[in-house]
Structures are given as structure tokens and as C-alpha cells.
Image (cartoon, rainbow, N blue to C red; front, side):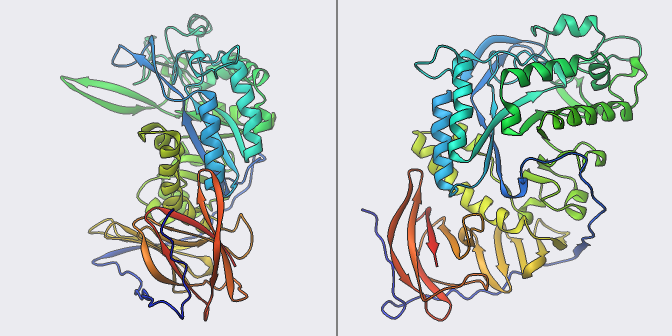
Length: 487
């Protein structure tokens, strides 16, 4: 049985952690926030600022050529549909039933990136034991995941075209592929390239989206992830042994199409799916024109998106350096794929990343940013939010304060879980501690005691009651232990 010290403040000697808020050193850049005019051009089906948006990697296709013109028929399998459901159930328990979106990666043909622009057949390697086909397994996964507050959808690609795709000859015949001014076809670092404008005007884009949506109940999931939704081509330039990627625009000079033509076609794709009840998310926001059309992105690198947009207007999962103080909505893909061991081991690794990254993210993502500070000499940074909330990233350590009260401190977390309900806090410690005194933030009301529940991939387990004294609670946690506190 785990060692547990639940504490009465009057009985045990307690260490009170008193810590001044960190300070940035050297010359500081200050950016103030001014919210830009905003309107939705689509109808988002999810609040991505309060949703764990992530992927699960099922299978990876293998390639022989450097620039991946076609796969070689082999694949590496990481997870079948039964295992994906097991991961989803564990995540639902760990996140205390937070709304979740999971995009399946490598669900088609021979795995990730195989056979695009086609996406009409399931990868039989992901079939659940006992099912007749992988298609049956995927449908079951989508249905069962709903019970665990999870919308399952798909990771697709509308930009690349591979020579072994069932649609390759049709796309050449219909003159959809991007071409240089002289007529030669353009390949990127991943296969040949599609002109969105040609794809749209020929009706090919609509046809394949219709077919995908007829195969799967994606409108019930309400979301679809379009990978590599670039507005320019990442063209590989080979110089000796080195390969440099240079972004080229417009996408297809041969067709005399401008970048604006291509962007308009991308927006038409988004609006077409919106009419079907489906949000479009992508790797990143390609241009400012996509704000109000794309409710969430994977990588939010562009500074202006932080400076002028709230997370409700465009949420994110991963991020650039500004994510150090704006939070990171953890992506389970890398955690479950790269962690060795059993599914329980993988889920425990997810718990650690969720607590350290997502708990602060979901706390601040509903707030309005006020200003951002960045040290010119290093990566130290700080951000001020509405509600008296301030975050810091100093000497590689993240911390979060509300009205001067510390809620996150280098892997020790004590943050209200608003999606669960009022007066509920989640506490977690990366390294563990004994008898740490936490001051309750003003939003937490207490009658002098609180119930403690231990949280793990199997669910929550009642531990006992702890007393509150003068607005403070004393806790002892093991390394990588997560608890729910109900005040």
C-alpha cells in the first residue's frame, strides 16, 4: 500500500513554502495585448480552449525513397482499435472526464501518410481481434469512445499525392497536381503536391470529402484534422549531401494561380465541411485569413496569434517558446507511442504530462492575456492574464500565481479543475514532497475540511479527509502522484 501522510496541521510539523515571484533579468521586451476584431465564419462544435485535442498513432507506413513518392508496403504498428479504446478510457479517468478529441493517425491503407489523396480504406493492421474488418473496428471505436467523453475522428491530408495512390492517375488526368511554369510536376518533401484551387474547381476535393463522410459518422464527432494544410510548398533543394527545405509560393505557377486563389480554395474546403457539421483543425494557422475559420491548431508559433486572439478564438496543443508561459495542451500521441511498457505505464506517463502541462493550460486558457515579457538574453519569459493570474518561465522552470498565491511551481501543481465543478482542486507532484502548505485561491470556498481522492488510469479512489486551517491545506504527495481535492 502506498505511503500516505494526510495531515492535520496542528499535529505535524509543516514546512511552509514561501517563495517570491520569479524575476526576469537583463533587457526585457514587453508586448501588450490588444484583442483584434473577430468574428466566426464557421460554427465551432467544440470549445477547444477547454478540450484535450490530441492524436493516437496507430501505424506508420515505410518508405524507400528519400522524398517519399510511394510507400513500400511495409508498416510499423503501434496500436489497434481495442488498445486505442483502452488508452481513451485511461485518459478519461486521468482527466476527470474532460471533453476530449482524438484524431486517429495511420488508420488508412498501410499507415500514416499512405496512399494520399485517397482516404477510403482502413488499415487492416489496426483491426481489433474478433472483428471481421478494420472498418468495423473503427466504427466501434468511434461509438464506444463517446461513453468516455471523447470524439474520435481522423487525421487526413489534402496536399500530398503519392504515386501508388488509387487516385494518382485521376489527379494527373484532371490536371490537379501542382506544376512549375514549364509544366514539370512539383514534389515536396512528402510526395507530389496538389493545387487546392484545381482540386476544388474540378470537384475532386468535394468528391473525396463526401466519400469519407459517407463512410464514417464524422459529423457526429464534429471535427476533422487536415495535416500539412500548407499555403506554400515545402520544396526540398539538394545541395551535395545537404537537403534544404524552401517554401515556394504560389503552389502551381503553371496554372497561373495566385496564393490568394489557393487560400480561397482552402477556405472553401473548410466551409464545405462546416456545412456538414464538421470543424477543421490543422497543424498551424497558415495565414491570418484562417482566423475565424479554424478554431484550433496544433502548433501556434505565430506571435500575433497570442497577441490578438484568445484561446476560445483559436486554441492550440503544442506551441513555440511562447507556450512556455501560455501553457501546452498535451498531445497523447507521442506519450503513448514512445513510452515503453504496458498500457498502464503509458497512461501513467500521460498523467504526468497532463498534470504538468494541461492543468495550467486549461486554467489560463479561459482568461484574457494582458502583457508578455521576454528576456532578450535567454528564454526567460512571463505573461500576465486577467483575474490576477501571472505565469513565469525562468531558468527552465514554470510557475503560476493567482493574486500572488502560487498554484504551480516547477512540477508541483495545485490548480482548480473548473470543468469538474466548483471548489475542486487537482494536486500533483513530479518529485514528491511532505507536508507542503498550499494557500487556497480566492475562488475556492471551504467549510473547514476537504475529501481527498487518488487519481490513476483506473479511476479515482477515496483516500480520506483533510482539515483546512486559515485558508490553507497541508499535503504530502509521492513522486508523480495526482489527487483530487473536493472542498
